[in-house]
Image (cartoon, rainbow, N blue to C red; front, top):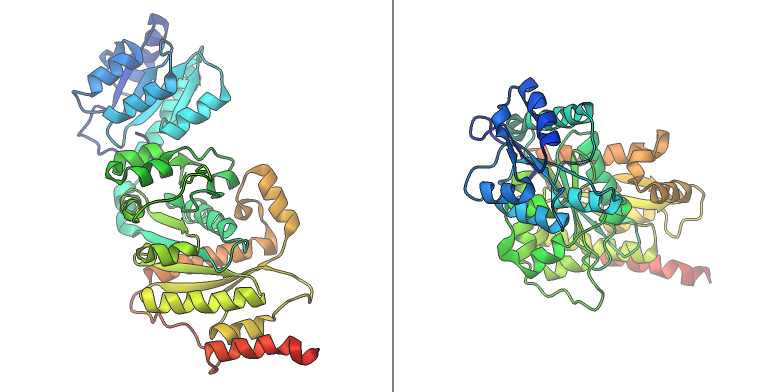
Length: 420
């Protein structure tokens, strides 16, 4: 219904309202006139009348709907979404003061929920915000900002790839001013929504179960908005529910996100590289996250080799995460780079205090980091945008050593034995 889609001016009515009582109608009409909208577009009948009317007519740019007479607001809003075209900004009003309901309604696609009784100033502020979204230069942005798709994959579980993916998505939205989708493909244990203090909803599991339902409207309803520029699709599927899919749903999700957003960040569990190799074929950039450990080195070698063979067109960025500031390294950066035969592009220091603070606040690490701690996230964001828009550049990684991959790793594996 609402952003990130933007309606095309001239093809729809600018405003329509469906209210349940005369007091709300009387408040709406003069505010509508202030915005140059027809007061006759304020209709009686509430949500039920809205669903009936919009099922046979075009959706307006801004839709005000009264939920006061609704017995099940969430299900009724979902019914409204079935008849609303993408691009409509929905503002709901009702008398239920429940934070969970508010979050569920926003997750279902509404722009804002006004608790009755609300004031004229609250109404004006909400409409002003909706108009700002509508007047955003979406069409021009698509020309100036070609879509960027970045895949983030950890070489092992627990290296912090999801933390980096969430921060990268936030950076692309807030710092690069791009509408951004974060697609967390760890269906059972994903943390994309959790890290942003959001309820993941059922959108991703519904997409996997019914790939034929995936279209622009589905994306709009399923995505959970973290802020004006960042939306998330994540899941917490029951652990007794196995993931059974041929990957069609993931491909369609990528396609729809490419149409709806200016950037997409895929948080891709490493096992999905094997199961669904097409997931990285369309990615401009693959961010490979590792720790400077023996196991991390081994698996970084294997994943980099896989990317070179299966996605040679994808630019690769190597990020070393949780690097301690002292000398307690299992493997030095130099030995790590020699083993993977390329340089490390970005170093993220080990900062447990910063990570704990971000978790408590429900914000990405990049949002609360400052000074030196913030610099790697800015560097990563700049590299992703640079690589994605680069033309004619070589996709070959920089060689750090002439040694063979496995030979170099074997020599490192032998070092502890020699020391003994």
